[in-house]
Amino acid sequence: MKYGPLFVIFHGSCSLICTAVAYVLITRGFDTTPFISFAENFVNLDNILAKVGHDRSSLTGTPTSKLACFGVAVIMNKCIQPLRLAFSCLMVPLIAKTRDKSY
Image (cartoon, rainbow, N blue to C red; front, side, top):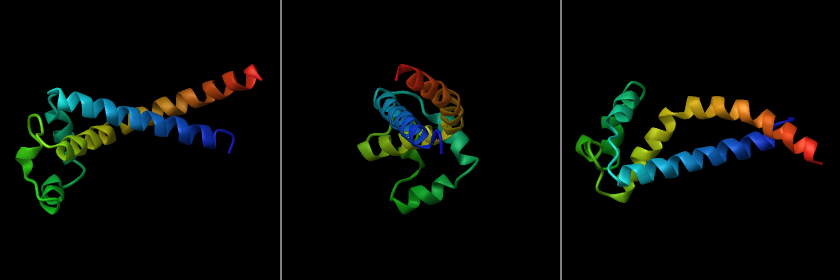
């Protein structure tokens, strides 16, 4: 419980920032094909896209709708989740030590 609240806040903030950055990159024309290919190894994208009324062409290239851009940004965020988790596990103890010394 020592780092619990700090970890939740830090990791959640990193997740939101990564999603926002991914969204901006996608709307600016970033190629998302490698992230989509990686995500296909773990989930059935065709099934998910069919449920929301889209097809695979909405994910290739630059998505045209804001919802498609956000969906791809979330997929990119999930693909880099192990890196964010490792970063959070390394940084939270350092932040806690720095915070404890400042009081």
